[in-house]
Amino acid sequence: MKALVLERTMQIEKEPLKLTALNVPRPKENEVLVKVHTCAVCRTDLHIVEGELPVHKRNIVPGHQVVGEVVAIGRAVKNHKVGEMVGVTWINSACGKCEFCKKGMENLCENMKFTGYDENGGYAEYIVVADDYAFKIPKGFDEAHASPLFCAGIIGYRAFKLSAVKKGDKLAMFGFGGSAHIIIQVARYLGIETLVFTRDEKHQKEAKSLGAVWVGKPDSKPPYLFDSAIIFAPDGRLVLYALKNLKRGGNVAIADIYMSRIPELDYGLLYEERSVKSVANYTRDDAMEFLDLAAKIPIRTQIREFTLEETNSAMLLLKQSKIGGSAVIRISR
Image: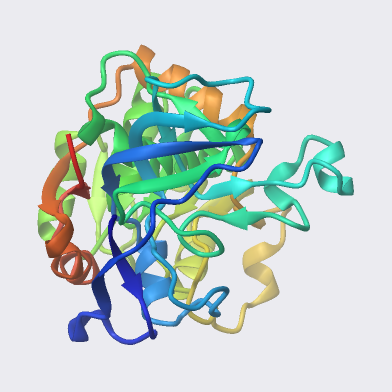
């Protein structure tokens, strides 16, 4: 099969992903084999490629926002059958035995394996994933538009939940990439006002078109304080910007796996029961809740398609904030 392999971490400008021929993987007894149709590009992939995240596996195939067809199943598989269309996301498997898994907190599993980081991912013609971590495609979505739901959507939704925002509240969003494009639609559907902070004028216009009540640059002073905030961009300074305009008792959720250093923090910004919380992965309940909601709203993802051979270029455009919405790699049909 064709696959893009990361042999050595380096800046994406040097095109580190190399087209390689690999054997088609075989599913274990509790795994499904998926023929990949599309895989959306995530900023986490960029962090892996450029070495901002520590190397977990050499010669890895990145990519973890996968949509494809189940073409083979292990003998212990219960949730899926051959011929189904499924989505695969960041969690490839969880152990089900550690204290966190037993509490229903598999997002903190001590033995978790990640797609495109510990196990080969979706920048390839085939991928294997644990039966419990393949999800059915929401009704009304084609494969390309569904791909961003399987990380940008699900992780964004967990951040949305951890922000504790509710109907009638004001939610600030810092950064306006693929995840924010999705979550602003969730907020609007649930009766929540959104303020968007982004330095890119094109993204400011997109945020307005999707219902933001106010837009500005990250260090701009908004017209009023907000109840909650989600930080989507991996810039540690945004934590301070968010806290400066957060109401008493408000929450900041950080939806990033990697972030630059957070500057020294004056305790006065946290005082009056303000909180900052990181977002780590997702639970299966998060995924199923969000996918049901995505079909109900319905979410409209903004995508730009690329071929497998164009993936390095797509990731460079992501780095340069030149993708409106999400880049989606077309592997097969």
